[in-house]
Image 1 (cartoon, rainbow, N blue to C red):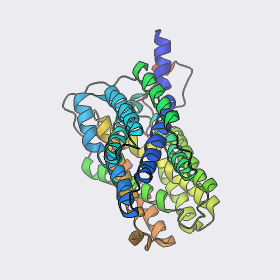
Image 2 (image 1 turned 30 degrees about the horizontal axis):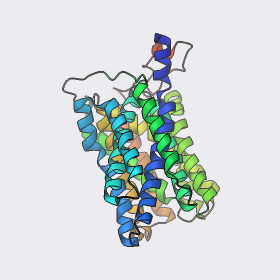
Image 3 (image 1 turned 90 degrees about the horizontal axis):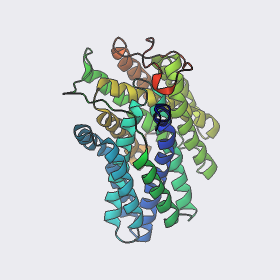
Length: 372
């Protein structure tokens, strides 16, 4: 394989594995939802079955990410994750607990392995991780549509996951350099910066899940929210790298705040708000990795932990009683403040704006750039 071909494979990693990400999320969520239906779990148990999956798939990621970083099991995590998801799909009508564990842990391992590589396609840039993560939003709404329409079939997922496993086996991955005894970035109060960024992720997740609570529950609107999440994450990294992380991240949160808070049942305004708020995802992810150099899987896992911490409360009607325009507005403004403060603390150490790409091959593109 020529060096040019290898460079192209590395460059296209977030696009190829973004599609695999869509497949993994669609397969695991549709499998979990049809598993509790197939085993006729009562509504009470079905609810906690779904919550347990979410905790396995997301809350377990910091611990698993720590282990993946220590063992450098990045490629193996992708393959093990896909294998576990495939096994979970095959067992969904046989035994619900095995399906739950395999789907949840498999999803987590895939995210950690592929997420670590996405952060190293072009180190320091928010564009590749945004492109990789974005399609997952489509996978989620696609799974919900398939389950609702009774269109979940075993063999299409089995064949697609098997094909994804083969692609993952032969793919030429970005290099992840080894860092001996990795430490946090040498900035003033790095733990404070870390918590500020994680809080911004928490709010983004909560508002992204709850912001459209007054909108009609139509399938088209659900897909609209899903595509808004996909486009926001994918485009957010591109614009942030070119215009500046702080400018794009804070501006999109401030603009989205009134749209989500006061959009009510106007799904067009709320969809635009969801699109804008999701544009901050690549920035927070790559900033977390900048704070934790040498630990890409752990950084990715912390982001996912903050995400599920923001999502889980929206499942409970006791929390929904506090939904309201001014509550959402206050949360969004606070999120903008914390994102600004967290990124400002990294500004002297981390480039937050990059020159436009030139005509050099992908492997030769510059990783440095101007500060915001």
